[in-house]
Image 1 (cartoon, helix red, strand yellow):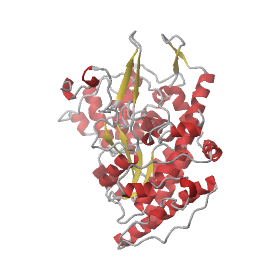
Image 2: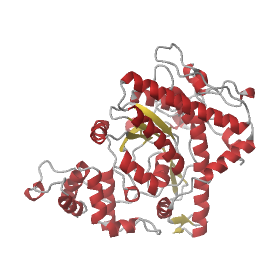
Image 3: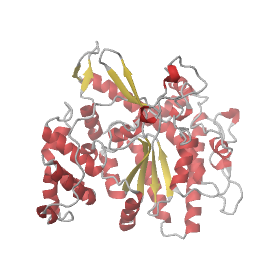
Image 4: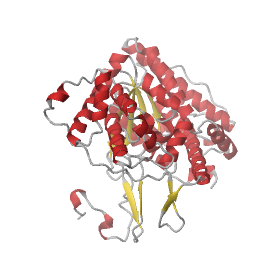
Length: 477
């Protein structure tokens, strides 16, 4: 289907999502028990702040003694990124096997190493990313204050340390976090944090002969850049190619560093000016792509101005309604359409093509993707077989094309909307309130809808009680 027709055929909140990709079956390993209330005498003498002691903890973290392993993992987790790094040094050979083109090793030792890595990092597939994530914002803020770094806070459906988190977060774990440049930037320049917005909805298709297909549906993810006080500096919505993601982070980090020493009023006005300029730049870029004129924006408004300047973020002067007015819609409490159909399909295709040149997976991400889908299903759907190179390349190119399309939509659509919001009066600073608005008005999955738009009460399904079961195994009455 042509790109411009595909854009018109999906609901607005799905515009920022690539095609759902398959999920590998989670590797099984016996769950670790919680660390015992009191550790043994030999364990009490291990100092997790000392590199030598961390090496001992890294070896104990994969012990067959589950209580000892759990206690060691807890200490490595408390040590932060150095604790995770010690696992990579201690188990380098096994970790290489986890990234094998034939798929992650499934022997007991490899499973224990993988589990230790993911519990210390709090990220699924941590063997590929080497990233340490806080799951408590207070601890992330403390780390940011101590280091002077901004916080990169991910919101997602599901949990980042689970296989079946939402689709975009799984794509981050493939195309972004393992990427050599992205991973280095995240480790050195940001304090990482994630929080689940709500569980990721799962759909299992049972074919009745033992075959089942499991997918997550709906939802979106967003990376917030926060200052050490937890105030919003910028927000990068949905999936981006690695180079575009780095550009967005570079700009947000510069905005943070340029304002971190300023008093509150100066900082607010400087950030509002930054977002107004970015919103207009994206709007004018989109207008230029379509070959239509756009008026210059007004000067940034001051905090005592009574109304936000809608034309800072939307192209109200664009003829023929080529672009919707998402900011005006948001102010009027109507749903935001992330990016409307361009009137010039050739220009839209050219934009996608331009992004496609820079979304190529680097060697690290490519190798991870190869190991993630090492097996393929045969034609009759009854057996798995090794994935051949030609099939992998085809799947890779389709994935990269989807990332290119998402990058264009998210930057010119959703990010433009967010810049507009952050240029408004008063500027949004409080994370939870801003995030609630993002999920309700931009992603169109408000917390007020427990069904995430998947249950249409007016529609008849022909299934008893409309196929609804409530929590605890109960049925709708």
